Every structure is written in structure tokens, then in C-alpha cells.
Length: 112
Image 1 (cartoon, rainbow, N blue to C red):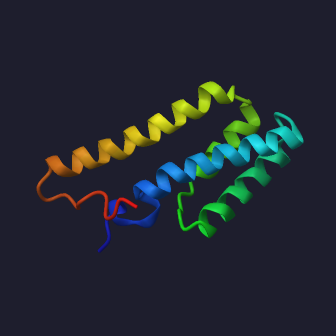
Image 2: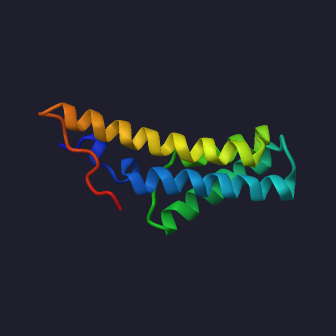
């Protein structure tokens, strides 16, 4: 039986790169379609999913990052560093929690 911690979409590479790809796609679509365009948000989510799968960095929640960027138009200079820091923090928190619990599945299954 697999733990969610061992799934490819939970590994650091997918989490961090996935959200960065989502942000990049979101800002690209935002520049092309403008803010608040639901159709643009759907395109951004689809393109993000295709890119993270092609890059072998699966992380489906990264699609939500693209949608947030298109619908909310956050200032990139503030949003991207915050997003990067929070993805690193969540990976490190998962690692620390896994290290503290002896019988827990080891996280991450691989770093890169």
C-alpha cells in the first residue's frame, strides 16, 4: 500500500517546480488574456498540467497556482518569492515530520 508521501506528485521536485511553472504560465496567460478571465484561467490550468507532466514534475495543485494568478493578478515581485518560499517550507516541514515519526513513511521518497 502506498502512502501519499511516496507519490510522485508529493516529491520536492514536483511541488517546487510545479508551482513555479504554474506561476509562469499564469503570468503568461494574464499578459495575453487579462485578469479575471475564467476562460484564461482554464487555459492556464490546462497548460500548466501539460507542462508539469511533460517535465516529469507532476503536481496537480500547481494548476491552482496558475488559476490564482490569472484571476487575482498578484504582483509578481511579491507573489513569486512568497510562493517559492512556501513550497520550500512545506517540503521541509514534510521532511521534518517524517524524520520525527519512526513508523511514518520516509519523505521524500527522492529529492530530485
